[in-house]
Length: 240
Ligand code: CAA
Image (cartoon, rainbow, N blue to C red; front, side):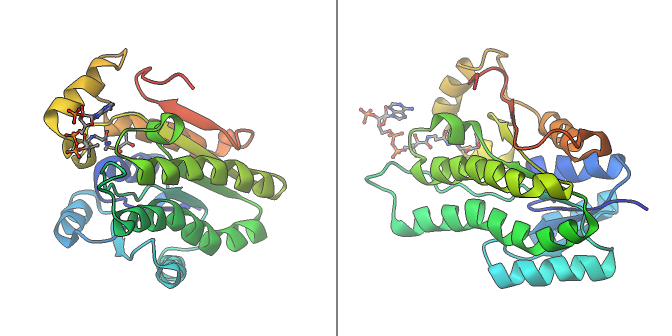
């Protein structure tokens, strides 16, 4: 029986590449998305992967969304918490709304989704949870106290949940991407991005599929002894 996987934010950017990599690995994938219907439809038409719309920041919507996936595809074995947003700004300019939106989506979303899938994984004694952190959660970033706090929180969340899952056959790991060639990074002002890329030893932005390969490994059958770890895929920018 094919494993069933949910990838949040799974129709665009890094999430799209993860959905495809898990599909290639033989899994049945449900790609969650929050807003962009047009891109989600194009994604499904292109890949055959079903897209499911709900907001990961909404606890009840996550419970209902996971139930819907389970009813339509089967019980969820794999969760990739990839959905994330940025609301960059220096402390002086950052509003409470900017702070709150990022914490609720990027960090709250991990809790909401894990909460919905964990009991079933526990019952079946098998699960894979991969959380997408960030180099900016490891190293901080000017103008990102909200995003860095959320991503740093994801790394702590990962290690704590890994301890709870270990005896239950559930592994919980994180990937910390560096700057990847996606819409999110394209929104960084060009002069700022140029300076960031100049500090990447590999000398370029990463590609989404380079993150997806790492996720696919952590979700595989033979990664059962890897848990509580963070895999940094950042071109050597921050060696952590
Ligand atoms: N270190 C030190 N000083 C910095 C700095 C840095 N990294 N970046 C900016 N500054 C300074 C500027 O030089 C400027 O100083 P002066 O006023 O003395 O000239 C001052 O801070 C204000 O800078 P800006 O004019 O750029 O201020 P702003 O308010 O218009 O914008 C900002 C600030 C929003 C942080 C903007 O610089 C920015 O968007 N930076 C990029 C942030 C970033 O990397 N985001 C990552 C998004 S992608 C992502 O998050 C994915 C992932 O996981 C990697």
